[in-house]
Amino acid sequence: MQIGAHALVFTGTFDEAGLTHAIRETSKAGFDLIEIPLMDPAGFDRDLAARLLKEHGLAASASLGLSESTDLTSPDPAVAAAGERMLGECLEIVHAMGGTRLCGVIYSAMKKYLEPATAAGRASSAAALHRLAGRAADLGIHLSLEVVNRYETNLLNTGRQALAFLDEVDHPNVSVHLDTYHMNIEEPDLFSPVLDVADRLGYVHIGESHRGYLGSGTVDFDAFFRGLARIDYDGPVVFESFSSAVVNEDLSRMLGIWRNLWQDSGDLAAHANTFIRGRLHGVRSIAG
Ligand code: FUD
Image (tube, rainbow, N blue to C red; front, side):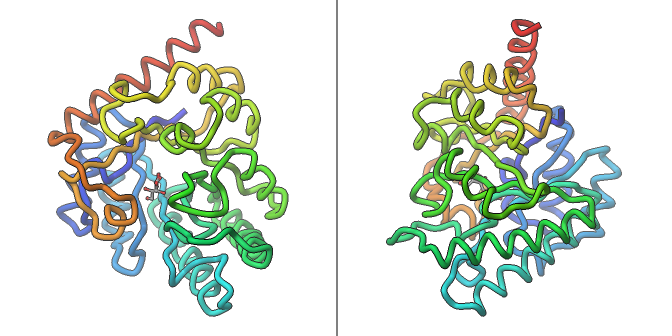
């Protein structure tokens, strides 16, 4: 099992200085993996990332949220096609970095929709993801669809909705990505959705209710980690936290990161690494 951190804990810019800092600090905090947001794939230096990851002995995954101009559920075929092209480019980048996972809100735009998802939008997204899953499999990359709260998509707000959508995508190379921050808003509890998704769970984000220090909010982490142990989950577990101390133009705006929840990324990350490993160890010893 790989324990990781989202790069936004350390940097909002992905030029040489930002990438170097994020990769060095993620490794220093004790993580195995860094999740790199590919909000701007065109401006991302994949060779540099690959070199830095190797230097620091860190694995990488990538995530993103699509935008209005790349929304796979859009009624405009040109927009949906742009989304598919962009995700194809992201697959190439993940491959070049030596990564094996692409996740996030890769099925719709990451935004507050003012209307429900349409049957046509859903079908267009499922069909595009089916094609992308095949290309991803050829590159040794697995796709996971992140379930997020109602203010960030109108398509997948619960684990059960994600399972129904996976049936429509109909490809074994796609799984569900659960995030405790979003589950805390939308799900009945933090345990039963993990059991519902079970072996179709492929990626996990660990975030607190206010997206700050783990254990200082209202997320029921005991229930969540018990769920992971019960289903023998062995995929990536990635810490995600956002504060106005680290700003990325696209992501911070989309996610409404207006408050300063922490200043010291290094302290936050080391705390999260200990917290996650401690909880995983705790539930394993109880189960065993
Ligand atoms: C969004 C979220 C993130 C997002 C990722 C993109 O609310 O939880 O996981 O998809 O940060 O890189």
